Amino acid sequence: MKEDFLLKNLAKLFDYERIFGAYDTDLVVLRENDIDEITFVIDDKTEFEADYNHVCVAEEIDERDFAVLARYLPKIGEALLKCLEHDFPDKKFVVFALIRLHDKAVVRFHQLFEGEKPYYDRSQFAGDPTVRLFEFRSR
Image 1 (cartoon, helix red, strand yellow):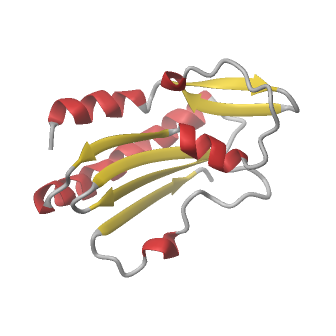
Image 2 (cartoon, rainbow, N blue to C red):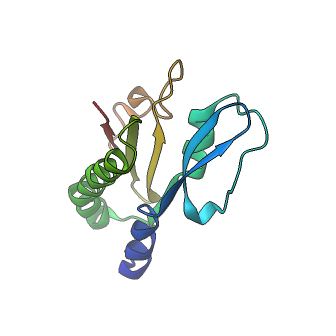
């Protein structure tokens, strides 16, 4: 695992902003996406935010990296959720940390929008020993 890649990309997760747009759109996105305003209707806000709010923190994960990430990435997920809740106390969020053996690790977040399901369904990965999905939700 490349530590400089990991640290640089983890830092990106904590650099987010709130953006507003047409039709009462109120989103939280990673600043690196460089979105100033939403001028169109977004039918699935969960998918929109989840697509824009993900960071690959590690690639080419071997068994050793898998174990290390499974131990420490949940702490990053918890910390990110606490920061989001602190910065936007009027909103509810979910943070996911997904690790795939021989592939990559991704941290992703989005708001919990009324009437929309979270981006990941834990049953998608049930019984797959090469995947670990950690989920942290606002109460």
